[in-house]
Length: 433
Image (cartoon, rainbow, N blue to C red; front, side, top):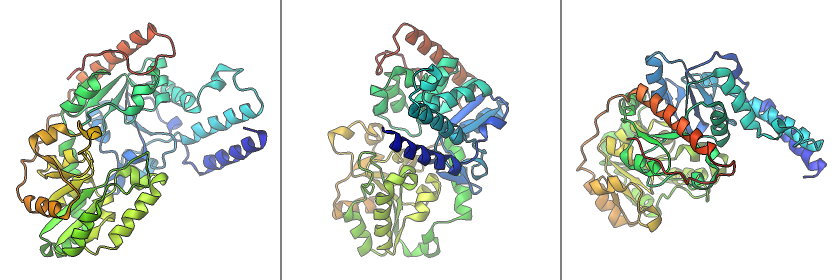
């Protein structure tokens, strides 16, 4: 990068600093448990405020037992402070300022003279935050590699909390990244995911206690903001939910919504279609084309809703539906929780053979071809529901803490016998379930 382009980029980051929310992470006292998530994870609302349906029930559980808890948004997040139910803290400005300092050092050709300067800005900020807050445990979604490195260096246990169920394999990035950039262990809510991740990292299966929390949140939301078809509910014989998937390699792909299904809805005015975008599609700028494509489809069908179905809590949308279609969304597990059968269009190829295999073996998920007659048969079958799930007991927090401590020590012992260039997941662990 020449000096002119470096100064141009410097100006871009400087504008980002001015536009970023003010940091609040430096004004709070130390805590026991620290939670990390991004804007995409705060896609649901409770009492009009953004909430993380994966981490916040855990946070409430820890807080009820006397642990001091704090939530922090990953760098770049905008849903922070008073817009969030638990007053999520921001550190974006600090990261951007460190980035400016690093860029200035590069321009002056001084980068590399000082080891601290050569560290990633995210790592520097995460390290300072952890040193200041002294948490006993970190729980994160999509554990940031620099956060994992900072936690490892300070001996603080960090666990990945899986945001969904039904994983047949681990995250692709984990297979090829440095072992130093991974969490100490994983919390999973289902046996299939626990077994998949447990082949590579210590994994603890915990009860899916979130169900009661999420069903209550759904009931509150439906009372305040019912779906748009409720005014004419008697007019519709079936209410279809299609949960759109997303493809980071092809962000313009409109979620797998088949034209055969939309054409069927156009011809049958007694069927209402709800299309739910994945939170990443709704918030990520790179998915703008996919959003526009779905918006155009919804505008062209009077008996179709995209907006309400994409912002309402997932269980509220599922409660309003009579049948669930998808490309390959893991929301099929939540559909099964409320007794709703799923028909999946995109699970027929070999790459998807392990996806939701537990649900498929139970008959709660069925593969379906993108064919109007197949869709008509599936809709007619939707009257036969499956037994809904019952809320499970709370996990033992002492067991979670003991698991985190043991996993953290095991990782430090493992890495202590390796060089700093260890790649991939070559260690063998026994899953704790």
